[in-house]
Length: 176
Image (tube, rainbow, N blue to C red; front, top):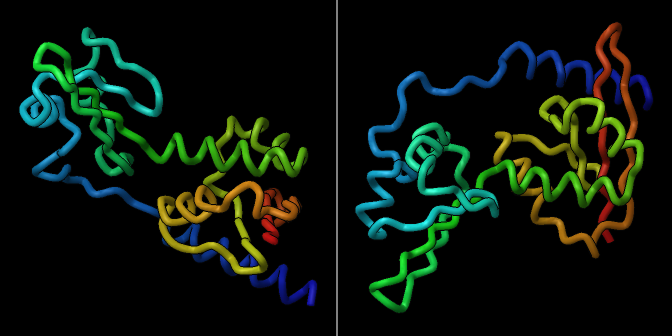
């Protein structure tokens, strides 16, 4: 069984490394997070990205540099008075990634330590939930891990698989 599992993981890594993930070369014609679009729609709003207020002096540059594909949720708090500005909250994958990493780290110090050694970048980690490997886009995997309530997690197992000179972290989340 151990040989089968190791072979499966190696095959999975080789396929994913060979295929890789690419981003489109052409930006979408309509970027819903551009300053011009948000300004026109919400009348010069205050902008909050991942719970951080963006000062007016840098909001245009910040939004123009924001990857529109990274924005997973836009919430608008409409002002009740015309003198007050609307507030637009943008949530990106980064906030969700930080949230599930913090949640899983509370169950496994080995996971937390490995994340810290990799500057919290877990794109090459293999995640399992109840013995089901998580597949799909980075956003899909992020959504699944983010949506697991902390009180539904029974345990988090962490293991590092060694393939020659390459170490691959394997994280298994067991739910109640």
